[in-house]
Length: 310
Image (cartoon, rainbow, N blue to C red; front, side):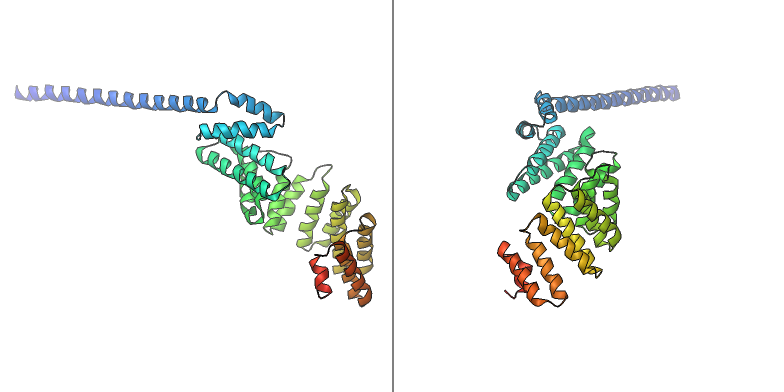
């Protein structure tokens, strides 16, 4: 009889434990679902009704309006990745429109801070675009941040994000950290049927740094001949003249420098380059005359002042 009583008690105890286990599991499940529901509700509430207005303004290119709306909502809902990303993207667009460098950096810093916060929280479907903008923002911040620009642009590309200027910015960032081979590869992916003159110039500079002068010359000639921007064409011809000079082709170099002056007679760099060319050929008088012309245009032109012993 005693054995049966113990057996019955053990069965009741096991049933109670099983019941408690089931109840415990149910409580955990309920807590998880309630937590998820609260997070979803908070996220939806944190975006708010202004989101449609912000997106409409963004699509219309009204970045100032987006900036005001996003910044206000990001303050009110500091854990909303949507508003943080919108604030960061709008800040970047405003930054690139500034004339004053100090103002540019102010908005760039806002962009970087907002987007980095969003990535820490989790930017969801906006993640790859946020990394793309963050990469461009770091590039705009300065050469010392180019390595971070490369990092985030590569992350955006690996996430299959596509933008017409993503490889161009990646190439520029690689060039800033002197990774010229990677720069050329990125620039090559940016080339389309009608590449910009600045892209052609950037590719040429990377090839020049690699010592691959034939490739550099091809892009410089294309840039100089097709660019409608006098300043860009001048940069291409000056670099082309420098390349010819390194090869001992001083006559060809002189033609490029004179071509720059035909387009813009107030280019101090072209007069300076001519002076150096004449000095190398042994005509010191003619060389000093060109350096003086450079200083009449730009009294602070350091290389010319140095050549004249000033």
